[in-house]
Length: 395
Image 1 (cartoon, rainbow, N blue to C red):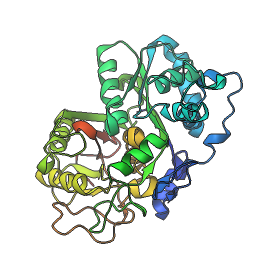
Image 2: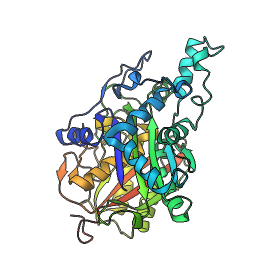
Image 3: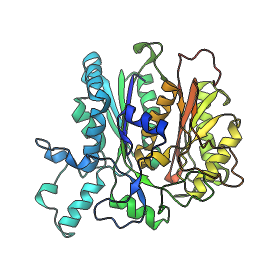
């Protein structure tokens, strides 16, 4: 893991993210997305509408604008340029996760065209395309290696790390730009309301009074290389686990069996048994069934001493970008020793199977996990390591 960055409702770049986490200052606001009447709170990124598309009109969309802001944060585009020069543009792959792609742009086109013919400026081959985020990031970064856009619901941009691992292991590339981009749109806001999953207040993961999710948007990226091509003390991806339980379109199986399988696989690939983990960033959306099932999966695998928490109270649930955003939060936890608690959690659900952390904790850890679980039973868990921490203990 040679570099990473995230842009979300709490700000652009890693410094803004860590500052908000440390101050326990969330980025949610009452829904002010244009033309939306959904009574909820959202995690909206400021400045997306101001992106200038001069010279690139065929790429214009809110999603691609968010991707551009994300690439520019923390000088990440310059780091990618260095990798392009080092390895060659054809030896750097691109893997991007999303759930909505640029559907928001298509919604605009239908609305402005009266549901009949798209206005001229909206006839964009590159925007109205499920692969638009991956293709745009590769275009913007000047990369010519293999490109893939993954859409496996809310696990999308966690799975990019697993695919990157396999690409590097197979030798088809020397570096991989991974990431995730998902932007607010009406299909998501109205769709989750129709499922009765949106909350009229800021989300409360694992709280006894939780009543739904807060939807957010985000863009995040990371650059992966093989171990021999990185400094010895660089944070690394130690393991990944994937599962597809296919139990129900939107509900997890009782006991969180799919989540348990992905977590166990990630631990096994990292050569760990579980107690070595110092921190787990939970999927924790604040929906009734998902929080309960994830806590049960944790209790089956980990001791109660492991710090586990959800950070969606800060950013909202960023859907296809949740995996990369929360992977960056996990990496920053390893780098700084700041282990975020669960914002807005005031009273744990009665009988919750695992003691989810309310407050932030400060202590150095060597291993941390990030969970991302999506509709349809798409599950992915990632284990990251700070090799600079001596020994295998959690703290």
